[in-house]
Amino acid sequence: MSDALDAAGPQAAWIARLWWISLWLCVAVFIGVMAALAWALWRARRAAATGDPGGNAPPGKDRALRVLVGSATLLSSVLLVGLLEVSVLTDRGLARLPRGDALSIRVTAHQWWWEMVYEDDRADHVFATANELVIPVGRPVVVTLEADDVIHSFWVPNLHGKKDLIPGRSTTIEFRADRAGRFVGRCAEFCGLQHAFMAYDVVALPPDRYAQWADHERAAAPEPRAADAVRGRELFLTGSCMLCHAVQGTSAQGRRGPDLTHFASRSHIGAGSIANSPQALARWIEDPQKLKPGANMPSHFLPADDLAALVAYLETLT
Ligand SMILES: [Cu+2]
Image (cartoon, rainbow, N blue to C red; front, side, top):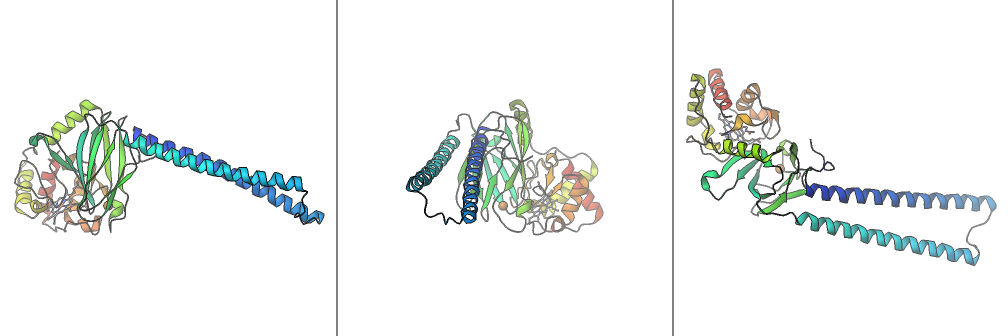
């Protein structure tokens, strides 16, 4: 679900309020202008019918018209200044989120996926995930935004407005979710071939469930037990996969692609490209270029049993 008018937090509520005020004000002005236009047309027709060119209105009427136009101009100016004031207030409101006890997450945009690193003072508490931002309800989140290649834009309509990620620069965006839910985030700045498939989920969980999730994410990948999964790990660690991907608890520490330590728990493959299932995963490993043309992962046309073993291994990464 992704709806800027269905605010799930204070920031989005500010923006939605500004939107509604602008909308209704503009509707009222539009109706006023249309009514004035209709009146002018009606007068012009009546003038044509009576043969009165209309320019010779009695002096009293002329003055009344001037007062009318004058007050309409004044009203427009007041409304415009009012809108300016409301947007300044909104800007202030957006900047006023209390930041005490904030959760700090570093989000790096890559063509075309998102890297999320959960920061912590304790080094062994830091962990990484991809294309999924899990946050606790009721706690402010400070997201540090960075870009790896080109300009991207971070946008979760239910929680906040947009913020650009610019290579070589670090910015932050703060928000808070006040209710649990799954919200869709998008890249909102055209960033190349697969810009449309650069989505992520923001999952807001009650604090105790968030803590459970974070503990699980911090844990290294579980040891595979089944024979094919063990062979799959062998292939993963001796083949090209480990050059680009990390699986914590193994020697794979690549950073070119998403961290796969808990890949099987994610809802989608390829930043919203396809739903995560063993069949989809096999198709992805074999030929990501078919599912997401241009993606920065090469195709791997492997023997069928190697592919099955890799899938079996990745499915253990819950
Ligand atoms: Cu992008």
